[in-house]
Image 1 (cartoon, one colour):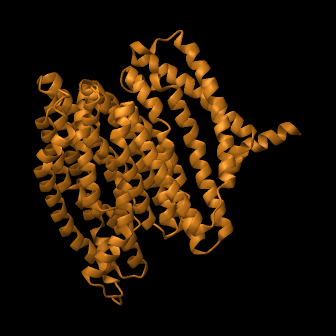
Image 2 (tube, rainbow, N blue to C red):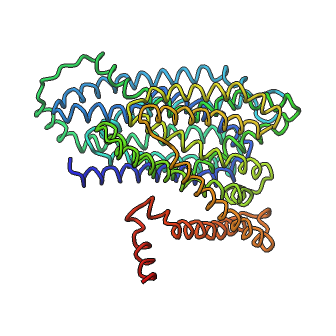
Image 3 (tube, rainbow, N blue to C red):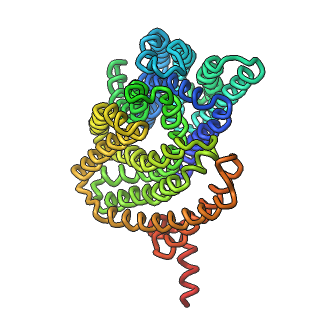
Length: 541
C-alpha cells in the first residue's frame, strides 16, 4: 500500500469518526428540549447497560479483525481472513441474538438497582421498558462491527467511515422525529418517547448495515479475485484463529468499557445514596445533569484532543519496535504535550464559562453550572487514560490497561456511595476523578518502566501551559463579567451562545498569542506554524 493511499485511508476513517462523534454531541441540544432532565435520566438508565453489552458483544472486533486480516493479506494468505470472516459472521449473529435476549430478560433485575422508590420520578417499569427497547440493537451491531473490521483489514476505510456517519444520521433523525411525534403530535408519555429514542439505536444500525452490504456487493468481484491469488501455504484452525483474534481484541474491550462501567457504578448507587441523605426528590434530576447532559459537554475536548494525539501512536510503536530510544522519547514528549496543550485551556474555559455553556446547550440550571464546573477537570483524566492506554498498546504492554482499569474501578466502587453521602452530586464526580487518577498514574508508571521514559520535560512544559491557561482564564473571566452586565444568560439560550462565543474567541486568542510568542506553537506543531516563525524573523530584521 502506498504512503499516499495509507494517509488518505487514515484521513477518511478519522474524518468519519470525528463527524459521527460531532453529530452525537450536537443532537443532545434538541433532545434535551424535548425530554428534559427526567427524560435524560431515563435515557441514561437504558443506554448505559446497552453500552456495556455492546462492548462485550463486539469485543473490540473492528480493530482486532482489521489487524488479523491485514496481517494475513500481507502474506497473500487471503483465504484465512475470509474464513475467519465467514465463521465470525455466524458467531456475531449468535452473540448478538443471545446478548439481546439476555439484556431483555434481565431488565427487570437491573431496574430495581437503578431506581429508589423514594425518588418518585421514573418508575421501575419505566426503566425496564427503556432497557428492553434498546436491546434490539444488539442483534445488528456485532455483525456490522465484523464487516467494518474486514473492510479495514483490506485497507478500505470508506465503508467504515460512511456507515458510521449514516448510522448516526439515521439514529438521530429517528430519535428526534420519533420523540417529537410521540410528545408533541400524539401527546404520548415520556417513557414512550424515551423508548423510541433508545430504539433508534436499532434503526440506525440498520442504516449502517445497509451501507456495508452495498459496499460488499460492490467489492465482491475484487475479493473473489484475491481468493484466486491465495498462496495457501499457511493452515490455521478456527480455534487458532479465534485465539489470535482474542489476543488482539481483549485490550480494546477493556479500554472501551472504562466510561460505561464508571457510569454503571453511578447508575446502581447514585439514587440510593442521594435518597439516604434526604435528596431523593432531586436525585434523578441531579443524575441526568451529571451523567447525561454535563458528561456530553465534558467529552468534547476529550474527543478533539485524543484524536490529535493518537495520530502519533503509530510512530511511537515503530520507534519502540526498532529500539530507537531517542525517537521514542521525542514522540512521547510530543504526544503528551499536544494532549495537554489542547485539553488544559478547553477544561479551564469550560469551568470559567460553566453557567453560559450549560445554558447554551440546554437551559440555565444552577445545578448544571455547579456540576459542569466540577466535572470539567475530569476531561484531562479521560484524555490521559485514552492516550496512555493507546501508548501501552503501541509498546505491546496492553495487558496493563486491564489492570489499571480494574484498579480505578475499585477506587470508584469503594468511594462512590461514601462521597455522595458527604458531597451529594459532586461526590460522584470526585469518585470518578480519583478512579481515573489511579488508572492514569498506573499507566504512566508502566510506560516509564518499559520505555525508561522520564516525565521531567513534559511536567515542566505542562506547568508552563498551566500558567498560560491561568492567564487566559483571567481574561475570559473579565470578558464574561463584562458581557453578563449586558446579556442575562439565565433567561435564554441565544444570550448564552453570544457570551460563550465572544469569551471563548478572546480567551483562545490570548492563549494562542502567548503560545506563539513563547515559541510553544512551533515547538509542538513544527511546520504547521512555521509561517508565524518566519513573520517574527522578518520583523526582527
